[in-house]
Length: 347
Image (cartoon, rainbow, N blue to C red):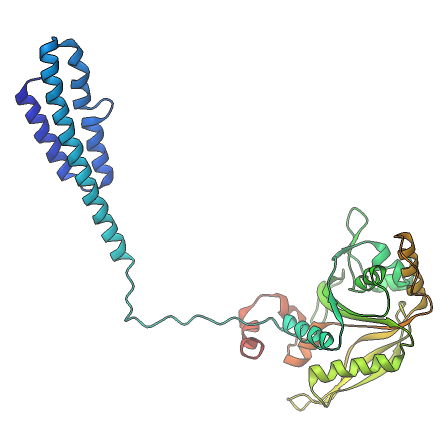
């Protein structure tokens, strides 16, 4: 390779470097001249065929050529990177003179708001709020609550059974049993969460819904304490004019049992009695079953001779009444046209 050819190669390489429009093209130029099979690299590989004196001269010549190309590549790479950065910054620039975009405000779900209101009321009365497993066993969901396998009440609670013999809990009363097994009286607790019933859905029934249940156990607890508690809850939910009444009813885990209703002077002028849930004095069989479970767990029997009351209600029922929602299925359809109506009031 003559000196004239080296100069020609240098001019071609520097011109190609300067003409490269972007970094990939520049990399292609580098590969063409300085890569493993590049033109300069090939010439360096032929040096071994030359006599020693000419090899030194041509080697020095080629090294100068390679250094010139490398310097040009480095300079051009810096220019192209700067141009790419400038272009990206220009494309991402914000026009601060443009009007801002309104962002929609979120809000609490009606059921979540009612659950929050309820638990807040009971926490102020000294209750502990607990949650527990939605997949439960028969002992805690039925047996300990005075609902043996042959009890007709099981027919009223169509159950989702799992292959391993467990079930999706049909009420949050399972947590009353679990709580008493690990806590000694006196106690005050409310349990909340999802429950499941295998039944057809309609405007007032869903296969999955929420419950909140309360339990108080101690010495000398009476129905008067129960009614006073529910009256305080009603006033917290519906205002100072709310009143509570009981009507006799049957539940296997309480005796006596009752349904409770609230007199509500609502803003739409539709004052009336609203049925909200069931309640009663804890059945002695439930307390004995709890002591049996405690004894099996190595704990002391402490519930025999105690009295207590329990109550349960559905937050969806309260939300439907309070906010005029006609169909329980609206709660879980995730339709923003429905839920968005409560954003201002519930947020």
